[in-house]
Length: 137
Image 1 (cartoon, rainbow, N blue to C red):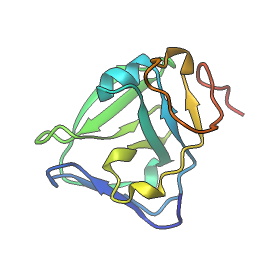
Image 2 (tube, rainbow, N blue to C red):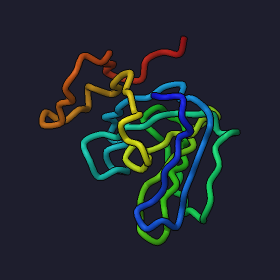
Image 3 (tube, rainbow, N blue to C red):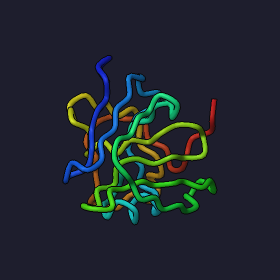
Image 4 (cartoon, rainbow, N blue to C red):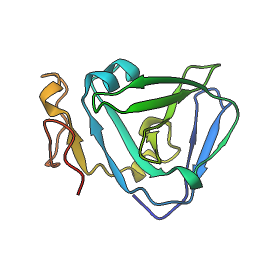
């Protein structure tokens, strides 16, 4: 990830976000919860502190219990349906990488829940992989 501000938004332009904070972690998640929420084989997200995250426009949110057992609040645009970001229980914001204005800045660091990865969803590379969520250091 570069040291530039992270900006992004929904497909129709009604909701935008920005942060000056550097991501603390970035990766791919293959858990069933993320697959169902994204409609894809995995999600790609980058995480920044919630306190420096600014949103313009109104979002709609949906809360559920993730595979980790923690509640996660996912935000999306009520007009176009773009899934934008999520508030997990750890004080961070998980930004959906596909909504970032500069996708090339994304640098994944790991894959999690690989035991639930679909055989056809094979991410190329040599990222550290974890069958579940790795223990916190």
